[in-house]
Image (cartoon, rainbow, N blue to C red; front, side, top):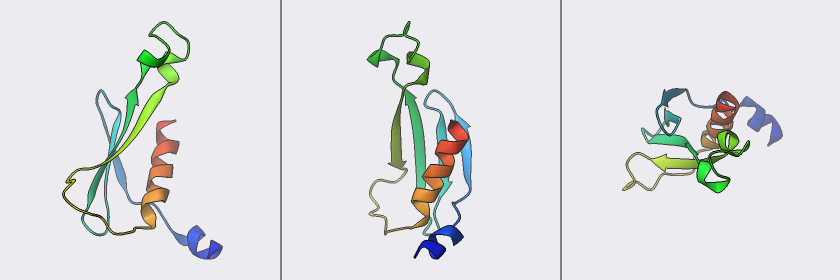
Length: 86
């Protein structure tokens, strides 16, 4: 199982930016996701040294009427997006 995991690669993704620091990717099943890093300055106050470092992570289906099947590449993709953002 571990060898299989090392062979899995993330999906290609793109950085859309914007107010929510959005990333986008599409799965092999033609399901589109948006991953957002929403600023949460309200937690500590805008003047806090932590404000620019605090985010809410949102993983959103673009079409929420779909129930996506299990997809082993999604966790690797989200991890790669984390690495890209931070």
